[in-house]
Amino acid sequence: MNDAVLRCEGLSKTYLNGPRPVEVLHDISLSVAAGERVAIMGASGSGKSTLLHCLGGLDEPSHGEIFAGEQALSGLSDRQRGALRNRYFGFVYQFHHLLPEFTALENVAMPLLIRRDSVAVASQRAGEMLDAVGLSDRVRHKPTELSGGERQRVAVARAMVTRPACILADEPTGNLDQTTAASVFQLMRELSEQHATSFIMVTHDAGIAEAMDRVLLLRDGRIVM
Image (cartoon, rainbow, N blue to C red; front, side, top):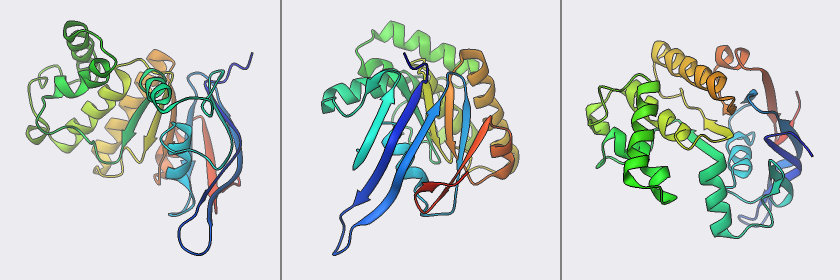
């Protein structure tokens, strides 16, 4: 049995837009252990976000295989893939993508409600996660009533509420000022340590990358470091 939380073997992605195919990822293999924090760096257009989307089952590779634990993603139907994403992964983006008509509590509870947990259970878990990210006094506030840092904390709580094995984060601090970015990153690191949750984070911030367990450098769709 392979004890990796997430791994891929020979992962390639080619887009067939226009007269010539565009190869975005080329023959990538990597493995992430439980609780490990991995940064992905590289220039714009190097394939970072595409790699993250493939690893999380949001996009399908052209070649290669991805394993969430021992489960190969390639053999899953769209419905099965969606259920696995809900159970196994959490996602955090540069922009929080909170639903503006719902409160912080309702936004965080949403992944649990999608998988048909009861409203009572989902609300309790969401409240616990908001408390864990320091927002117990903001549960009834809507996104427009929160600061940028608070909105991103809600997004982190939403990603963590299902107790996923792995968080995939695409520039989660890229839209924040330096002080707030450091605070949000420290929060994510603490949650990773508390719950043994793996983090794979795309970032341009060298300071954040250095604080991770490992840094992968992408260049022209290939891992070069």
